[in-house]
Every structure is written in structure tokens, then in C-alpha cells.
Length: 407
Image: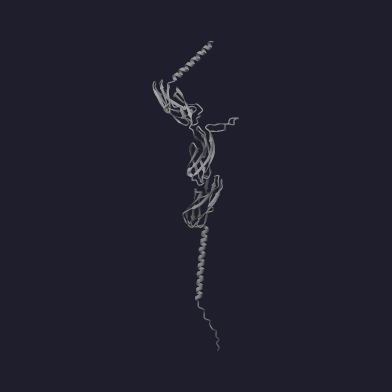
């Protein structure tokens, strides 16, 4: 019995201590809360509320702040800056509180306001009932899943999710996706969406299965001649009652992003009259066949550059090698390039150097032989000419008559 009395006494003391602590912590008193300039309680989904909180200080407190939020979304609460209060002082603070766009009009909604100090002391709190409603017709682009990069000539896939945020059915809803700079457009039908999910009741035939969201995939074909760069992708969801637009940035990659041009050597030394062979390897790491055009670029007429195949098709994931033959009529150092194009895009300008010497062994030999033969033939011609002249100008000898003498 004595133990029970002691226990009751201790419990009473604990309750008294908690009450005293609570009372001492209540250092302010909320006197008024105005919504949008008055006591308005009807709010719309997605709306920003102007909330003014009036309160009076009951005692000194430092680092006081006010928090406000809509019930069910405390993680999106807004807070005032910290300030000090003094007994008898009247204060007022203004907030901008965002109403969630996904509110359910059938649920009770409250504006929550709380005042506290930095050390965790509780000041005062209040909850204001709100009458939540939606705009009649609102379609939201809830999500767009799309790659930020796409290869020219490929399809750009957009996975789009729409949600009906309005109070009525969103009927015959479409989505149009465009890249205006390229003249590209695609459209998909998303159908009807109800204001809230309406699953089919078990055993009931009088209610259709309706949802407030709809998801589709939309494909945009990027032209193969699209210039590489960053483009604006516009996504518009619309029906007969509403329209909403979302934009994203898309990087379009050219053929060069999936192509590689390599050469085993870029410089060779050879003689006048000789031919040097260079090689260029084209690598297509993309997922489509690519056609490359090779063009020689040089400014000296004494140089001759011959490309084995000027137009070559390289299947996806493969490579091909092209031979380039070079010769020169004069000695010197020559610079030339082979430009590799795919469509209208320059993939790479491969640079080469040819060091051409005065003569090569073969050309020197053949040159000297020709000179010697020319000289020999000239000498023979002169000798024959002289002999011919001598023969033509020589007088014939007179014949001597033989006579007999008789004595």
C-alpha cells in the first residue's frame, strides 16, 4: 500500500514537471493566420499561397523561426529567417507556401504553422482547414525518358508519361514532339484519362477500369544529314480543353562520333619518278553501314596523288583500308591531305608528308642510259653522214689503157 502511494506521488510529480516544462516552453502565442490576404480557405492544386502569420511574444526567446507547410508534404515546408522576440511584442511574418499539384480533393487538407526556437523549445502551432480543389482541365507531362544524345540517321525514342491533374476527364489526349530546327515532328495518341484511378470492381460490370495516367513511346527519326550540335526538343501534351509544353536539350552526334580514321605512317621519302604508297584505315564503330568519300587536297602541280577507292562503304562494326599512291616530278618536300567525308560531314582531314629526293637509283640509271644512247646514236649519225658526204664528193679514177709496143 505504501509502495503504491509512493508510485502515485512520483507519477504526479512527473506530470507536473512536464506541464511546467510545456508552459515554460510556450514563449509565443499565434494570434492570426491569413491566407491570400484574408481568411480564404479554398485553394487550388499547384497554387502558391500568400500566408501571413501574426503572433505575440510571452517571454524572451532567441533564434525563433516559423515553419509552414501543407499537410502530407512537411518535407516541402518553408521557414522564416531566425529572429529574437521580447515579452509583449506583436509580430507578423509573410510566407509563400506551395500547394502540391497532386492533391486528392476527397481528402482533408490543412495549412500547418509551427513556431519554435533554435534550442528546440516549442512556441505554438495551429492547423487551418483548407478546401482543396483542382482546375477543371489540366494535363501534366509527368515524365519524359529520353537519351540526351542521338546519332544522326537514328531514331530518338521518347518514353512519355502523362497525368490528369484536372477535376474532369481528359479526353482524346495527344502528344506532339518536335525538333523545329530540323523540321522533325512525331505524334502519339494517349487516349482518355480520368481524374482519379478507378479500378474495376470485383464482380461488377458497371464500372470501367480507368486510370489518371497514360504512357506511350514516341519515335523521332533524326535525318542522316543533320548537323552535329545541341537542339531543342519540344514536347506538347494537348486535347480539346488544355495544353502543356515541356522542352529538353538533345545533342545530335555526326558520323564522325562513330568513325575513326587512322594511318600507319604519315611521312615517306622517295625519289623523283618513284611511287610511294600510303594507307588509310576507316573504322565504323556505329550500328549502321556508312559510306565514306575520300578526296585528295594539295596545291603543287608537281605532285600527283591517286586514291585507290574514292568512295567506300564500311559495314557497321568493321573497318576497311584504302591505298593512296603518290609520285612527284620534281624534288622537294610536299604536304598533302586526304579528306574523309560521310554525307555532308567532314570526318577527318588526314595529313601526309612526301620528301622527294633529286633522283632514285633506278631513275638515275635509266636517265644516264638514255643520255649515253643518245650520244652514241648522234656520233653514229655524224660518222655515217661524213662517210656519205665523202663517198658522194669523191671523183672516180681514170682507167689506164694498156698498149703494146713493138720493137
